[in-house]
Figure 1: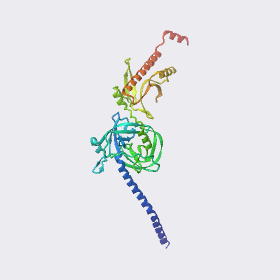
Figure 2: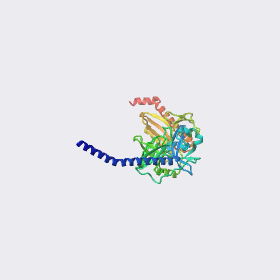
Figure 3: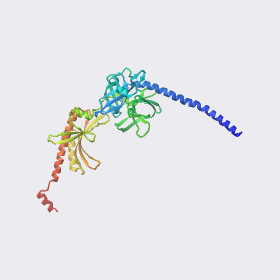
Figure 4: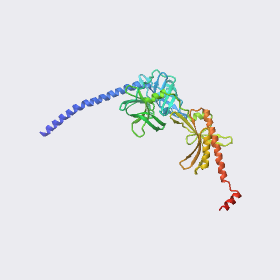
Length: 408
């Protein structure tokens, strides 16, 4: 009797619980379906603004990324600076349809480059914000410029992203996520030092997605994908729309040419050194040869790009004397470009180098002249130090020997 009553009570409790739970389950299913429908509509809206980008740097190394069409009148595509690197040109693909369906295989586009690709030139780069603009000569009729959001997205909002992940044979990949935070961030990446307003999202951004549009539920651009966290799973960083607007409206500055291209244009003979930098063996008027190195990559601060040129004069286990340091300081006050630098390497040795830092956008002939100048300054000092060493190593004269003996 007791068992029957308990069973009946459990049955009643279960039915009551299910009557309360079922509407909640249906609501969740309904919300998921609505979200999926919204995501699908957003994808269709944003896809005509999304592009696949291929570039080649001065080392003839090819890289790919994603971008977004932002200005129909000026035919401008926005992407990351690290996607274009030091390239001056880019090849851009817009999504193509066949029989009403979007072509998604990379090979389909690569096999039809002449038909589907749009050539472009990089007209502006801001490496601090990691942004770049590509100007196209032609734009297909199917392309649609995206609408930029009026303001930054807020924490907790859902966002959608379209990208072209490098590890996949498929393009125009859709991802959704949530905004974790929006803040100013200073950080270093493999592509340099950055300082910009970040939209931090819970989305699986991958290499190749860089530069891809990140949009709100209205399909408006609120950021572009930039990088992912190396330490936190599914945490990604995107460049906020405020930074994008400021960049587009600011004076445009193209990226400097790659060092290899500059040296070739200047008709300077060079070799690739084991360090990855370029070595120029400059002939001096004395007939001697002085090795001068030009950095493979340019340095930058804010929007200033710098190309480093240097020559090694001395390597010693002993610290430079006070006399030598004074001589180097006096020369630094008189030299036209660059100056003497004393560094200590990992082996505890002291290196004396002459270093010049040039505007990386300087013409080719200016780079060639700077290499010659560094070689002449370094060569003269090298000769002086060599003479000094020989002088110190000379055997004592009879008078000096007698004086030293008498002094004992």
